[in-house]
Image (cartoon, rainbow, N blue to C red; front, side, top):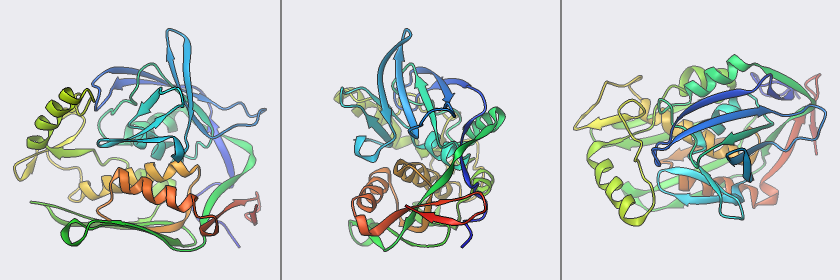
Length: 311
């Protein structure tokens, strides 16, 4: 049995260090990021976030759904000591689809920078650094049986299902007043993600953002303090400030977030995700329920000759 088309057979890391800076979507704070390659001579442990301040390591936070903490409008990982990192989803989607399986992401503030609101700047930066294959087979999570999470009903129904498939596939449907019913489906590979999904931006209505910012200040939780038309697709009335990159940009961004949140599982999927009105919370519920159901998945990996080996 051959592996899924478009994916490599060996795990990888960056060929050189990546440095980038920007501001957080929610905190508004400036943040500097260094992504350090894994040492091929040592046993690596996936993607690990490292919080630093003045050269001192404050916490190391592996990508693990059990370390996820609920936050408005983003995905957050938190170490046992309370130190966290917010808005990780765009970077995780980019690392997964650029096949950077092992690296350390070092930040000097709490939130991953939003950049232009999409994953494309991360894709470009990672590709510019290059990739080095590691001497270990590429691992996938193969789905063995259907798992579903649901909340709400009628027009407020949110439902995500994952089921067996030979490739990583998604089908996402979402509706937005003034823009109609939107749908995107297809295979997720490094190329299709970069070409069709990565450029889609975070979005929201201006009339919702202002009260959310105020509520965040009152509650002491930063929300959208860094939101600008330069880093979001800002909806004003029935239009978008500056226009859309694609007519269905909003649903493509839902795909981007879904891929980033499912990356908390630690590997690409061999399965099909069907999502109706997905959200960060529902994405987390799906990945955590899948991993908590032992007979619903298994590890699978590929040797260089594309022979499927199961652990």
